[in-house]
Length: 423
Image (tube, rainbow, N blue to C red):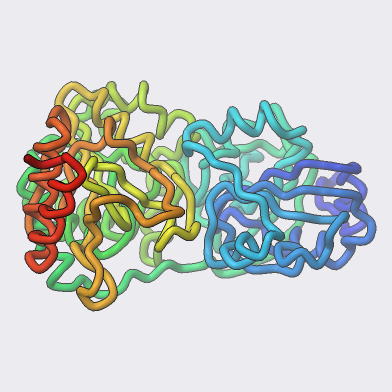
């Protein structure tokens, strides 16, 4: 008996008021979603739960109300406007807690996921993903969308044919995330971070101009380790340069640990059948208690604005929701728990052609605090590093004003004195 499903067989598996769990990014099963949308009138109040959705769809826009709807845990270009229009729900979370949230607050009816083709032993790989679905293997029904373009990776993301309800086949090239060129501003910010990274440190590093610039500046380092929620393109050069070997890590020695992979085809080719990678559930990768075991953890993240208390608003822009918390708070806590940990949150000092300071007396009204004043360690701009952890409110304000753009420093100091932050 084959487990290859027809459209009708797949639809027959979807129960009334089902909660369907999807991986993020390239784990998104495009054709399975096509089938659900094309036959949405057969569905009764079915909800799809997902982070970082790739494709905007009619059901996300609210066009299939009472049949199929979307619950987001991290907004993307595909869901952002629909959230603002009120057709997508957004659930606040710390990334490492999402599997627990699914268990507590959804029926966990089924996982729908893209996967690499089955190997000779009957195993599929979730490829670029482990994220918040891999720990449900063997516990929750899975339907897979088999895609020959999905790389085969190793870790907690292996699923046997006996553990799935069935699969369909749909060969679709993976979505690529191409980073813009590294700017001079990126390099200035990155240089301050790179000089604080030592041989043997374990890095959590994300995507964007500054993280890419940091990775470029580390290629002469030795014995670096990688333990990061997202594996970006820049890691390839860092590994191939010999800077990363993972031999000084305290956990998963020698392994590049990640929860999901998102970048260009060059990255997907690099990770295919690469035994040095270990993809693990985000509840393990991002748990601050686990991160603390990496004594030399260095966390590098970005924000949109910081107030003079040190609060970081990283998921809103101009007081309007843009994304969500992701793993920033997880790694901020993890870096604090680690014996020699360091946390860096970076940003340009200004926005809109230097007309707005990103360092503010108070956050823009409507902004949401992602990293609290108690968890922040270092804030970095092109003007330097403000070391905040353990500092008084007045010392924090002084340090942050020093790394603001010079044309805003006098005004910030004046306003801080009025507020009583500075004497």
